[in-house]
Image 1 (cartoon, rainbow, N blue to C red):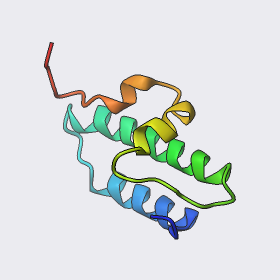
Image 2 (image 1 turned 90 degrees about the vertical axis):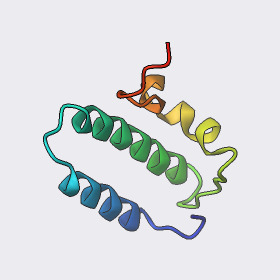
Image 3 (image 1 turned 45 degrees about the vertical axis):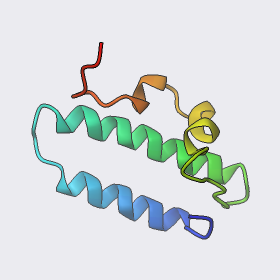
Length: 80
């Protein structure tokens, strides 16, 4: 991730959207993934394009850049 460019992330996000179908569960999930992806891009933008994320800290680091904290919750998961 540290050397991932913005254009690579945008291409990845675009390909995910293209693969999504019209399932009632896919559309809300894709919206949330888009918010998370935009948060990652904003995080990198504030750090001269460098992503310093690990599997342990990525959510805490991009959380300030995601406008809706519910984006981190899967819409098909019902755990109370």
